[in-house]
Length: 350
Image (tube, rainbow, N blue to C red):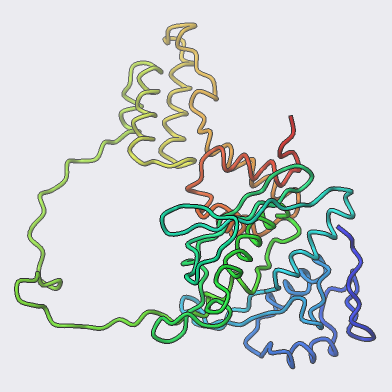
């Protein structure tokens, strides 16, 4: 990516080696809507992002938007750009790297799951699909209208989402696809089209009386029979006679919901390896390697996080969930490996 920063001119120009906003720059940012609720960390992050992306905050190519966060009980500021800002960054990166950038035809989907290459209905589409092709590698993304549509009072669709729902849904899909194709360059900044839904009002909650024949939700629940005692997989592993028995206990614990990297699975694995290494253990059929008890999902996640650290991506969890729709902790080996390949630049390699 080019390190040349768009020049705002004079004292507003951002230097590549700059570590803090100058007084002149800070004054202009305040006039642009960044109030005293912003934190020093958010301002520092915004400066770093402006330097990394090459977008100019003083011409509104990128800007901070403050929204009230009920969990943090304060206004939280999030960097935003437009889909045009994403396109500028993508074209700049491929030009510097000597790569190619292209798109496949945009598709729209109706509520029945049927796809169209042009949307003619006056109704909003259910979803849109955009495929970005970077240096021959396809990066497809689907955006659902219901997840991004902007609504106002009484759940009414407002803004451009009411006038151009097909265009707005396609822009969100394009943003998702571009972020998958350029995870390092677009990390930490989202498009205004994607974030419009963040301003949707919280749904109203009304109390009502219990109707005749309807169960009272506040009534005391009937006693529930005690559940069967949970298995102590670790104790069973220690009591097992052979490593083969420990292997089965390891599988049972995984099926019971013990996730990758949990202390339970790790201890069972250590017990199994110890029993296999014991002089009393049969050989060589009972020999156990680390790989036999290794969790492939945990290893894939570890490799992904190591790759993200190596390329300087500090928003991995948020970017992964935005790209795949699920947290890293719920992803499979294929998704984790795919993201690792994207970050390391080996996606699509033979």
